[in-house]
Amino acid sequence: MAKLRSPLVITQLTFIFLQLADFATTMIALHMEGVEKNSLVSRFMVIGSLQGLILSKVVILGIAAAAVLLRKQRVLRWANVVFGGVVLWNLVMIARLAFRAHGA
Image 1 (tube, rainbow, N blue to C red):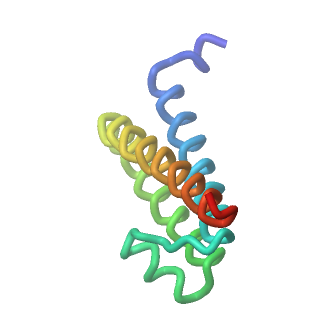
Image 2 (tube, rainbow, N blue to C red; image 1 turned 180 degrees about the vertical axis):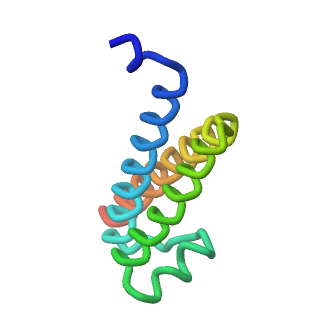
């Protein structure tokens, strides 16, 4: 149980959670006729929204795995800050799209 509480494991689990949250909130926003604003991710989406988003997550998970293998935990911590902001942004956009859809 002590290993699950180590800072590195918590950082890694947080990263995975944020990737899942980003994926889910992005798919919800796209379903509500939102638009992907990240130019790299939007380029991946030429193969399809779902496929492009999955591809972008595979790439970011590969980069994260490399950071862990190279013992660059600081990279993962900064990524968590960035993706926390991305998820928050997505939630705000979902709320705006929902209000717009209901004429508020």
